[in-house]
Length: 81
Image 1 (cartoon, rainbow, N blue to C red):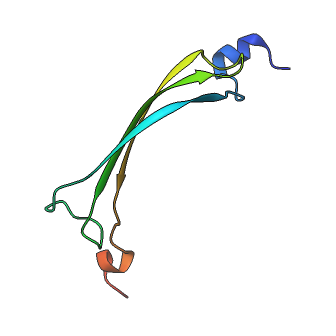
Image 2 (image 1 turned 45 degrees about the horizontal axis):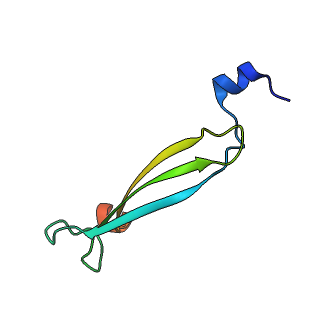
């Protein structure tokens, strides 16, 4: 069993949370196109999660940001050899 001092310093790894997260997505302007289909999408999510065990804080605010794009291949950047 881990000592309480170690748990305070390094956290516990059996943290379980449940809750709702709301996501918002938007395609970015046409001038900023990184994907082949001409779309670059920004997604953001925010929510409140409740701790389900003693190792988890009672409440956690979660915030996620994701930028979805398709980059160029190696050959497109450096040329085929």
